[in-house]
View (cartoon, helix red, strand yellow):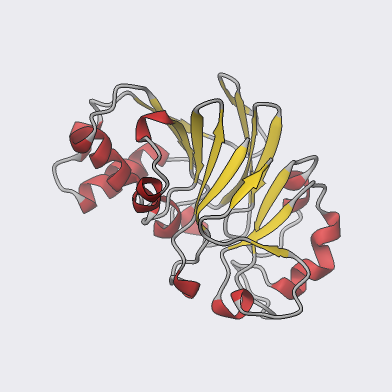
Length: 243
């Protein structure tokens, strides 16, 4: 399995990075973890056929994490008409959130998306959601409450990949990362401790609690991107990881 970093930036584009989206690829099939506003651009840059993306998993309802879905869907309707089914998985209300966002960004197209073979599924904390050969488990995390924030873990093709989503420290990150082959964890700040996002200082004190083969940081402000004497791994756009 391979992970391609389509975007590991924050909402403000620090470091000139793209919005959050990670592409997992195995056996000719792709899964997206989050689909920030810049995702379609990055998929085209990587030469990915949207038809081969079977599943989109959303961690929470902020534009830099799910704002790319309308672009994905209009391309799938008008540019390259989609024939294969697509599953979009997210927190409670994901169907309505995507429908409303689609209509807000491209009025009159939300109804048209219903002609696509899209299945919307909601996860619940700690309850495995099984779709074919994929199992998704979500844990609530600490971020903007209206965005319904979660960390998610995907078990697929014999591998376990987890992503924290956006969050400050919560003990739920520990079971989320347990026995994973890869854990992607947000790290927005260098030293600042505040609700909604993690800092490098906090992670230095807690990363040993994570049970993972690979830990990589994402969603970094400029101060984290540019910091020296950094002992944890930092992702960058376009990076590819073997899992």
